[in-house]
Each structure stands twice: as structure tokens, then as C-alpha cells.
Image 1: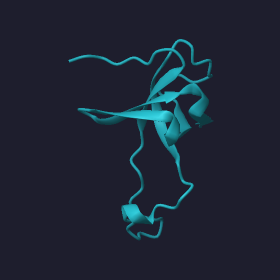
Image 2: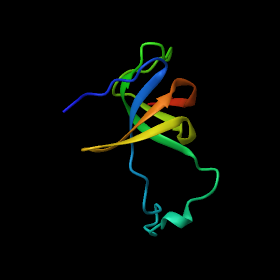
Image 3: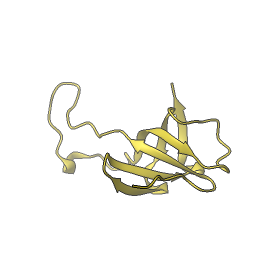
Image 4: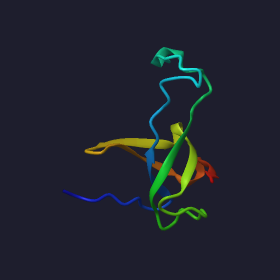
Length: 91
């Protein structure tokens, strides 16, 4: 087993699962995703030493999916995200 740590200006983020239903209970197939909905929400696992952001492990952030590299791990999936792709810190 090995551990992963982001280098430079990258963050390691565990993305939240996408909603498969609307608030009213309607099931959404993958083909129903609206264009332009490329922002994802996730939990910060680790922060690279050059990230320069006011975030730390455990924070929830909104990030652009096109600035990330996804990696499959035994627990699901994690994303390495460039600091400039972090859009907001959620509270």
C-alpha cells in the first residue's frame, strides 16, 4: 500500500458523488446532465506546499472538473486539482 500527497500547487480532493435524483425524486440518467455544469464539490484530503490557498484537509470546496486529474483508489476516486481550479471554499 502507498500514500499519495499532492506536489506543488495541487490539492488532493475526494469528490462527492453526483446526485442521481432531483429534489422531487425524479431519477436522472447520465445523458440528462446539463452542459455547463462542470463544477464539482469535494472534500480536501491534502494540500500541496505551494498551493497558496486558505484551505486545509477536511474543507469542502467547489472546483472545476477540467483542472483535475482523476485517480481510482480502493475507496473510490480522488482528484488532483490545480490551485487555480478551486472556485470557492464552502461552509
